[in-house]
Length: 308
Image (cartoon, rainbow, N blue to C red):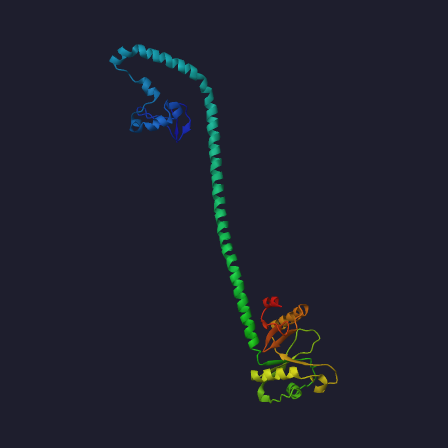
């Protein structure tokens, strides 16, 4: 930054006189910025108008060119007279330069804001890209979750493969569950001993005002399957046959998981709506068949309900 030796305004660029070493802006130097740039190494020999006018001419040059210098001086005087009114514009120029400086500062601030905005946009775009990748992974993850849930359901049901669930038998004080199951075995013509059973117990139920079902865990899956098959063929599964005074029937079925019980209920309801003749459970698996000539298929999940 320097002060022009002619007009006194501050500038960051201009011409430097090789004689007086004064700085001039291009407007006061008498040379255009482009012309000064083209001087190259000759910039070191450039002189301001004042130094050029103060140079003492050699006697030979004075004698030969005095008349020409007078004419030039006369022309310069005329030019100076014409340029005199321009002095009043200096203040306006200074004001314009000041306003241009403020505009430059404003543009700098705007540039910084745009730069910050660009950075934020890049961050948002990066996050969107991550979200897009995540959205592509969601179907895969859902499929994996479905597979794992089905695997858990299959294992949970497999753990009940040897179990029989008996529903509809009222709870009595000091009841002997083993004797009750033996009575059912005799009704179905399926005698067995205690060594065939792992455990017998009543379990809680979610149904309100409903008797707790009896779960019988056989040591052998084949015994359990035979017991269920004979019980389904038996027409004498009534409470009176077990010594109860109340009327009604009880039911012997595979011990399904809570999920499969709900799935069976939905399948039966949908089967009635779609005129399916057969919805049943075999070996703890929910099976379906529309008619005697239709193919049999298994219902393992709610997705399979669409087959009905």
